[in-house]
Image (cartoon, rainbow, N blue to C red):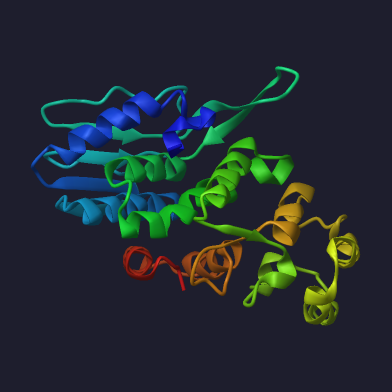
Length: 288
C-alpha cells in the first residue's frame, strides 16, 4: 500500500498522482518554490529527493512569500484549504497547501478529522514520483515533521500523525521506540525530566520485562504530567513513541529541536541555514 492509499490522503490522492505523472514527463526543469520556514525546508527536501532519484532537473527557491517560476513549478503554501487547487497548465503548476481531511473512521463510525500538512503531501508526491528511489526512502521518515510541528499535538491526539507514524513503522521505514532506547536524546525535548533517573532506567532497560518497562517509564514521566510546557499527547509521544530510522542515533524530535534552536536564533542567514539543512538531509537522511 502506498502513502496515497491511506484514507487520510483520499481527498488529495488524485491530484498528487496527476502531478507526479506530469512532473515525471514534463521534460523541463522544475522550480520548487517553498516558504523560508520549517515546513518549506522539509517539503522541499522531500520533493528534491524524488527529483534526484528520477533525474528530474530542478531549482530550489526559498522565499518568505513563495511564487512560481516562469516554467513548471511546485509551490508550497502555508494557508489552509479544504481541497488542493487544480493543477494549472501552460506552464504546469502544482500548489500544495495544508488540507483538513477525514483522517480516521472510528469503529463506531465517528470521523476523526485532522490536518494533512504540506510536508506530508510532499512526501506522498515524492513517493509517487520515485517509489523505489534511495533518497526518497531515506527522507520518508520526515513526512511526520509537518504534523509534529503543528498545533495538533498541543491539545489532543493527532490522527494524521498517528496514521502516518503507524504506516511508516509497518513498512520498516522507521522504528518507534521508548525514550530509554534512544542513544542520543536532546534534553530540551523533555524539559524537567530527572536525568539521573533516566540514566538509571536506561541502564536497566534491557533487563526489564514489558510490565517493568511500563512501570519504570511511567514513574519517570509522572512528574511531567502537570507540566505547562508539554501537552499530555506530546509527552506520550516523547516518552513512548520516539522516531528512529536506519542509521540514526538521535531520534526525530531531538534532531528537530536542535535545528530549531539554531533556526530561531538566526536572523540574517536563514536562507543559508535552510539550504544547508536541505543539502544535509539529501546527503545523509538526517538533520545532524
